[in-house]
Each structure stands twice: as structure tokens, then as C-alpha cells.
Image (cartoon, rainbow, N blue to C red; front, side):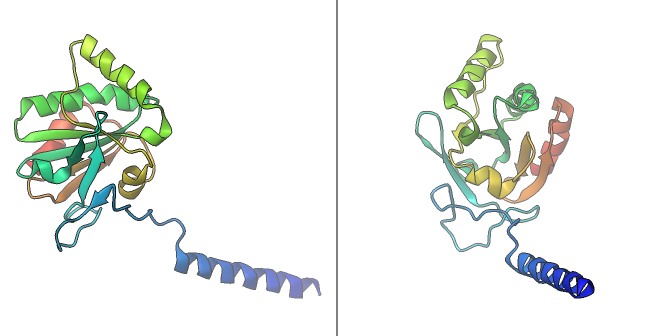
Length: 188
């Protein structure tokens, strides 16, 4: 009787494992159309070597910012939050790399779902007061759909998109200026 119960338990575990593999609850969330869309018929994706979706997010003033607005430039997309000290540390370096090259732009994606936008604005004002203002676009990710689609875990996280809109590199974790410059060579 005991052996039969153990065997039934093992069979139940195998069945559950097969169902989980088929349904894959750990896959990344689908992209919500109001956050990221595609106006063409080209196949787009979130992996290195794929054409990036035409990201559409609003800045802190409510203006729509699209990845396609920067066609012909290398684009660094950086997801950040003020509660992440590594994120805060690399923002001035990302902005400096952009300032050094007119063919490079950084889109700073604030994880608005994880904290109040006022906190983010406070840090941005601090950068300005210290003489290192963030002048590249700062957009909000209010439902975390951008972050969960492209990254899903870890902070800070950065995506490197070339002049043709192809994803060339991803980085999970902090970067110093030299690493940002080196990785940017792939997209310029």
C-alpha cells in the first residue's frame, strides 16, 4: 500500500511537471500594445539579433517617446529605479557616453510601477544640481510591461540597439563608463 502511494505521488509529480513545461508559466509576459507596438510587418523580438519592437512610452510630461524616433542612431535603453543604488550610480555615466557621441542616445526607462515618480524626479534634480543633468529621454513604465518583457529580473538592466533597430547586446548589472563606451561600439 505504501509503495503504491509513493508510485502515485511520483506519477502525479511527473504529470504536473509536463503540464508546467507545456504551459510555461515562467515565460516572459506578452507586450501590451499600448506600451510597445509595431507599425510594420517586420518580425520583431526581444533577443539579441532581432529587430526591436518600436517601444512607445510616455515621458514625465506625458509626451510619447518611440524607439523609431531615433532611427539612424545607436540607442541604449536602460531600465532603472531610484531604489536601486547601482542604477543611480550608472545614470551619469550613461548620459556622459551619450553626450560624447551625437549618434548615440539613451532612453532611461523608469520602473514607475515600483516607486513613486516624484522620487525619481528628486534624483534627477539632484543630478542637475551636481552639474550632471540627464538630458536624454526619461520615460515611465507604469505597469512594468517593458521591463518584464525585455528583462524580467535584475537591476540595472540595459539594452543596446543599433542604428537599424537591431538588438545587439543586453547587460544585467551595473556598468562603468568604459564598459558603456565599449558596448556602444556594437551599435554605432
